Image (cartoon, rainbow, N blue to C red; front, side, top):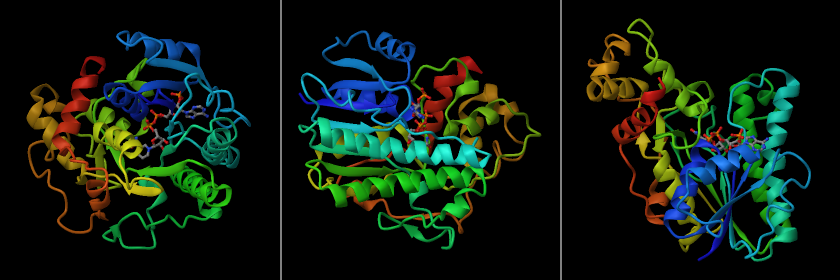
Length: 340
Ligand code: NDP
């Protein structure tokens, strides 16, 4: 069965990709930043021998040649899934913004260069890009987003604030990847996953909920809130369950027609008030934490003015069947409630 290199196995999404690869019989080597993180992954997968699951250290994907030795393996890799990239809104100074963008871009081009130079057996590469690389604020939110959409963000805009810096990091990294394919004509194909907000169970090792990944942070503040805490505004009315997204990454390695394609991977629309309503209904113990008037009340998304989307390509080519929001919310709350 084929052997896959997965970057950033300690992350929220990559942990699910790892489990999905193992469940489908792949042999996996994952990159992590430290031996401690690698050992934690092996400890939580004791049923797999070293031939099925191992790790390699890549301390910083931004370093030149960071992946040069990681892409070499015996037996050799046939595919690479690149998930590792910073996802946070903490870059405030120009230096921090520059570093965020460089990490995303250099990490992406770095792994592609390393595969081309040192891993000739690799046939497919899948990169976790983002809906961030698609959204165009000059269009109405109701624009029906699909794979041909690109975020036109300029570098001047990227330096305006931390969220814009993140949007730019994902846009420029994905663009750089497609440019690499066009200019370098490597012997592998590229597929990008472009998910919006990713929700669902947390299965990676967390020292505390303070280090929860960015997309789930709002859930934690909701669960720790009080009825007087207002329901946070929904910024992006599109979501996908992390388990569906993980499966999409693996199907992109397997399905004919997925090569050299982008995929908008989304289950569709949602809003934060719906999350509040689901938590209030399914978890009476958290009901008194939910914002008043939202928990059991309205909980409806606006009928108009939410993000348009067309996810048909992901259904037709990858064969995805998307989980509803309730499963993502319940999966998340069950996975963290002991830590609250
Ligand atoms: P996490 O923060 O949980 O995972 C990020 C991963 O990248 C971690 O393994 C992290 O390692 C690693 N990483 C970050 N910076 C570096 C670096 N400089 N060198 C080495 N490794 C690094 O976030 P997610 O799982 O949510 O995100 C994974 C990918 O999915 C990212 O590319 C993100 O942009 C994308 N994405 C996420 C969405 C979401 O809603 N969650 C939506 C759309 C796209 P460590 O843990 O050791 O820091």
